[in-house]
Length: 241
Ligand SMILES: O=C(O)[C@H](O)[C@@H](O)[C@H](O)[C@H](O)COP(=O)(O)O
View 1 (cartoon, rainbow, N blue to C red):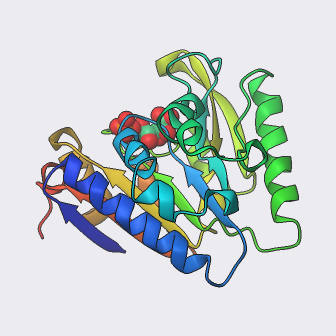
View 2 (view 1 turned 120 degrees about the vertical axis):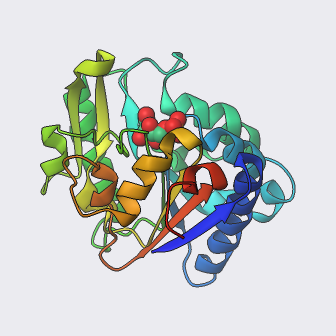
């Protein structure tokens, strides 16, 4: 695991935009397409907006990038809580990505159908290739969740399915989410986390003993890929380093 600490959220977004852009260019030297899994929440907004501007909008070969999502709130696309909508507004609409390269988790069919359909989409996208997302961007909640893997819920124990849906009582909505086993096949996973409200949880996730029931973010351990945590000083505040 590699930990990268930036002064504040603005600096962090700058660093991550540069890091991601270099990484994409490097990976594309030896393959034709790049598979990028986006995260929802608020933290990545600034990053997406930066990627949509110079120099990144100019240097990233958008036509070679395929976008997927790590999780989705089962609300209509027009709803401002919809994760895909946020990515469209801050990035995808601005850089003009080919619609065929954008693979959203649908919220216009039932959540179970959507999860089953997404698993099919992934399986047909990867075909006989290894299921290796080139990059999975993740966030962490102050309760230690990532994706829609919330503490204490059965979804944290999922070992087989790639995509699942379930009703999240605390938020009175269905969620559709990739599971930890499929994310752990990624070549690279990058967590983006900011804020003092996440400092204790971050310390527990990174430095504490393994307790995925309590801190589902600990489930993310790429089998063969890299794991990077990009955090700001406030989030890193409780750690020993
Ligand atoms: O749909 C979601 O809610 C997410 O994808 C979720 O896992 C998110 O990444 C974390 O809740 C962190 O969100 P913030 O970055 O907004 O704190």
